[in-house]
Length: 461
Image (cartoon, rainbow, N blue to C red; front, side, top):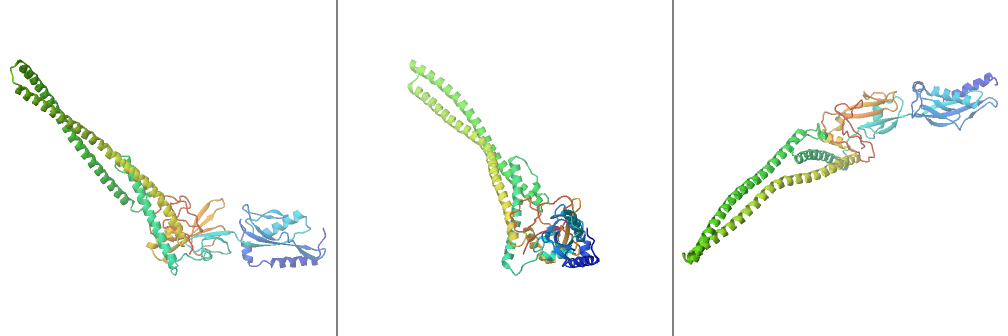
């Protein structure tokens, strides 16, 4: 290897200074302090000093933008995989130069300028104009993140069309929620009636819903009234059945008595016929007795017809009691089927209301909240950062406007409110959305559980 002269070393030093001065928009202090993370993009410039002809040559093939991968490496041609995570740009530059010198068997290290072309992203969600993914910037704070996301979500009072759409979406959403709540309670009541139970439990989906006890009391009262009505119908049928039973017993007694009378009349007629044949009694007596027998037999036939009619009435009365119960169960089952279909339609109505609200720049629950508490701009803002730990888990950090961010942070902007907004009774699959919007349908357990009063919404005006 040739020994470099003093002039060559001076030229190399000047060249290194020149290349370093090409790093635009990057402060020295930040370059020294900031260490690279996955998804950071760096711009690479490679220059080699050739002392043989006293000039420097740029390695255009290696110049360009490279991204730190998930393993924390930069994939550099010739140099291979170079560890970048946790290193400053100066340390990465030295590592690449060393790798190139070794792999290419150069007489010395090339001069490499490394600057950050684009930082890894942060994510902004909640009550901001344009939630989404944004590139991290040096010394970024929560308020800067809100600024690049378009500022806080605010009313568009000048646009009456969107405002009308918002109100309609909020009304449709609340109506669908209340309708589904009523249907679920009615469903529980009908199932209990079909099972012959005297009461029912509040559905698990409605646990904690405002006024749920009052709604249950109304359904229980309706259940009691329906039971009283059915019992009165059954009692009336039972009374009719008893009446027919008494009538049957009376007619049977009369029927038996009439048969005995006919037997006696027949014996008398036989005696009279015998006396007439002997000439001891006149024919008029025979005719009179014979007429009496015929009348008795006619009465017996009438009693038999009346007895048959009474027995038929008794059978119909007994059958009507069974039909009353069967008819109620059939009606309840038909109503239950209709309620099940209506619950499915209500779930669709909720999704449609959410989608329409987001299309109008307003999430359905936020619109619902603002119908009760106008003036979103006057609401107390809350800030929270979801940050990844080194072991891959996440933690929540309560923040304020001046809290400093790190790459990959998720910044949530919420509204601190004491309103008790009703939660939909079940988790729904969100409709296709142009922008991310989270309407909390249930509490999330674990470290990421939101504090009481926190409502994180996203939307775009």
